[in-house]
Length: 451
Figure 1: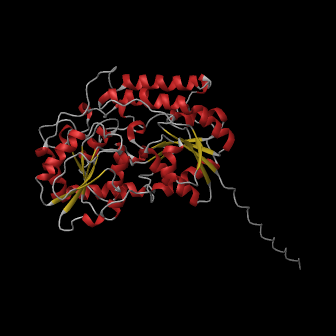
Figure 2 (figure 1 turned 60 degrees about the horizontal axis):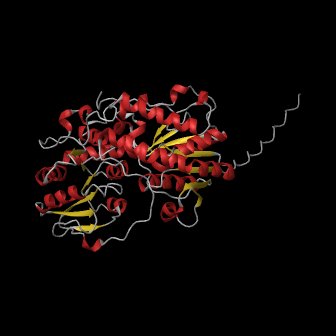
Figure 3 (figure 1 turned 180 degrees about the vertical axis):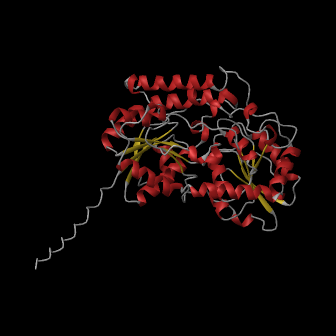
């Protein structure tokens, strides 16, 4: 009788994969740093290492003393125009291009010295993509807003192209916050101008023209702090190289706040127009204060300088802990400029919005949220106290706005946030792209909401 073959011994366990090194290149602005910081914390929680490139004066207060920061130095950049095509041009001419030129050598040194496995390059910090490509290091793109990823320059960024002309706010005193076709026109003309700017940065960096890739769009991975609905897209049509992960949130340093002054007997509205809009928001905040004075059952929490008059009982601070207020359920609605961070944070906590967009992607975000029923859009330049009061009353009194905000919030949370972003980035870094068609390096093509 044949002898049975003895079983093979079990294979030894595979050795653990070594930790990965991530280099993050983002503009030194809170709206870009805060979501990137949340991703970095999730990345570190997976056992990996992270380093940053940027001015220590801007990064240290948010990242803490133990963060690895490769310094770039700091410089002052030109102020940006308020609205329309001029604002997009001034963003690139006054900030993105000079910031890229100023930081490129420092980013290249960081790549050479720290030897990352992967670079995460913000879409408004092309130096990260340029340095990584030149060094042969895989790089992923980070899109904290919809200005680039949704390709609004070919679609609905401008007031005349809103997906639903009747969805703005239902009022009669709003004329839009941009529009027109100055500065070379909108749509394809402005997009073509920007493409020339990007190709100029590529050439100036000494990279081969034949290898040109739009530095806003990694051929391997684009992380976006948004959702298909907010981008006006069919989720099934989003390429697998795009990860729409929703807001990237984490515990963060918050300013002190007089919590004891919150009135439990009144509904509360958070008013914040963003850190970069203070120089143009004074008049709007004054009109908002007048609107709130006619809402005695509403308490306002206002992020504003001390010289802005506030209604009785309002709480005014130069900086307010936006995320903590939302997490505590301390506000019932939010009035803001439509920046993606504030919008995303509000929606994931189910809070409806009144949106007064100023520039960049804010008009398209406001238009989409109004069309989706989660917000009322008002005109930043012309909305008076009565219009603002009616908008606030609408989102506070009509439960449909809150229901729509809660639905969008669930969709955003389904993206997985910072944890999902870190997981996708890890998978990409372990097996990065090798050769992808150049046509993949492009914005997503959005359409009218509901199309």
